[in-house]
Length: 405
Image 1 (tube, rainbow, N blue to C red):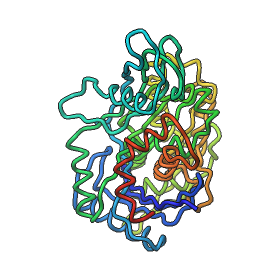
Image 2: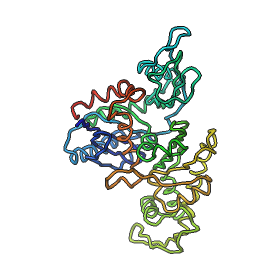
Image 3: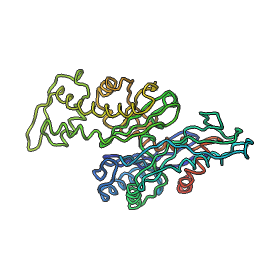
Image 4: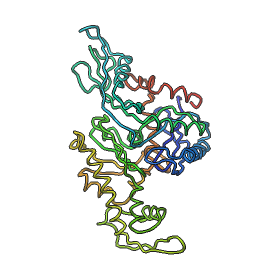
């Protein structure tokens, strides 16, 4: 049986996660999973290299111990306001003159490659090219053009670009931890492959990953990525609000949010909790009052998401609504409040795999690193885009990971 071992590293807002998995005939088996909290990363950017490297080494070491394998080369998930998505097109001539020719995998690869010739800021570079669909002469919306006849092939792609310096800092952290980057992926797109099914992506859906410092969104329609955004507000803003309003330390505010928080005051219980403060002091906190503090900031996040969705042409085409992931999506009542603001169905995302943490939406993007590899890895003979992506976009990854296959 053909089986391969892959390792993913996810640089989150407040943690570094590592996952090691085996992919065999399209099935994923988790061999190792670990995460380490860190304040070395803020809003997707490394702000303390030493702390980031320390967290990375600890997370990788524990995952390797569980998996009983050695890893060197890793697939990396990143986020941050420096990341930008753009729709692009690339084309290639297939026939000679007006005579049609047969479209090959090489034509597909070249059309995708040509779509990368877009204008970027000087400090940006492309990390991901997502082939959405193709046009063969006048025929639109083609997913697998190989073997068709045509004069011209156009590739419609979605390109993810990131700040070059930020990428080099991530690579430096990996190098100092004894690792090597095989590929970068934008976290919410990775999470999409772990949480969303094909029907949701086809009918129209938004994945919103609410992290500590940022909220990342990706809009899917007809199985194509049509919009992405990074909103610089996340769950830590809620914690800060609780700390300021209730005049308690931030670490106590975080625990209060996680243990007793509610995003929808109308259904929050009228109860008081005795919270232990520093120096032996205590404070009574009303759960409904706590919910009102949380509601204000969650409403702000949802209104930002609403603006991003409205900025596209697909606001009324999202039949599958919004799927929330990230730690903040665990707040009771967040789906009810979100539905009121967004006027769309809202659900909480889960990864459909047997693992202790798979039901926790906080780790969707980490699990997603294995899912996106599975998506790009043919487990039976294939033709067209996916096999060509393997030969090109994932060529390095294959070479890097041969020792673990």
